[in-house]
Image (tube, rainbow, N blue to C red; front, side, top):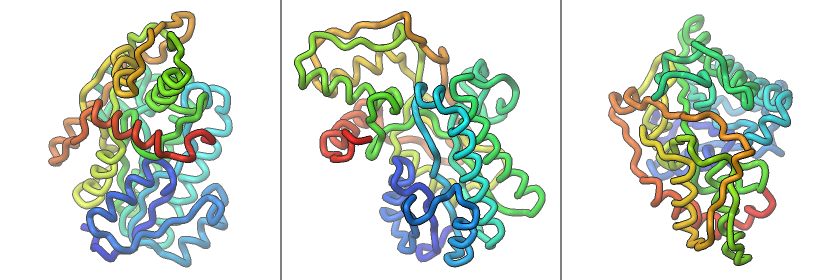
Length: 314
């Protein structure tokens, strides 16, 4: 168990996941949380990361920093996604190990699992088939981070763990028109359509793919829970175990935003993977379940979007 005054470093504290972890740690009474902005510490620079760990020597590390983006950003910047993610996670994990960090938690993504993995996807299906091409670079980097944690555990007896979240959403999400994920992109599009009195909104594909969504504060709660209650080489899936179609999701967002126009589908555009559901029985067996239902979470996200001054620039 982490002591309440233990020195805890949250890497990526300005992102959606990292900021939620900081909120959750503070909510639970942890008092010694250290953070660095990108300007203060570039995690892709090995010498900078080593110096930071030598000076601060954090006892616990949550590695939530990553270069992320939606399907367009991923497809267009394969080399950047691979290099930045691979370098930053290797630097942080290696420096944590070198400076005697008690425990590190690495956050990945459900895109590490094979494109045609049996549904729902269990942790053990990792590396049993081909990856989804559009985010293969990101997935390979995340798999490498997960495996490096496992190999340190095996070779040096460290206690490094990893968890793989499903699609996340919530406060501090990225609402950029082309670089965001599906749910925040829909929030922005329906909000702007409502503001501009547009008669219809056109979405990509046919709306049939199934997706699972986890509210980011629920993920943060699981992150702290696992840091205190789990050790092991195999990753832990983070999700709700529930799914809905993109069409249902779209209608739900329109309802929350109160957009009354028509929803059209451009079937010349790709659907992406037909189904992506995580098997969350492992987290359940450890004693954890999610709390926030999707419609409630979307309402909270929309409130955040309306009150987030950075949303237009991101």
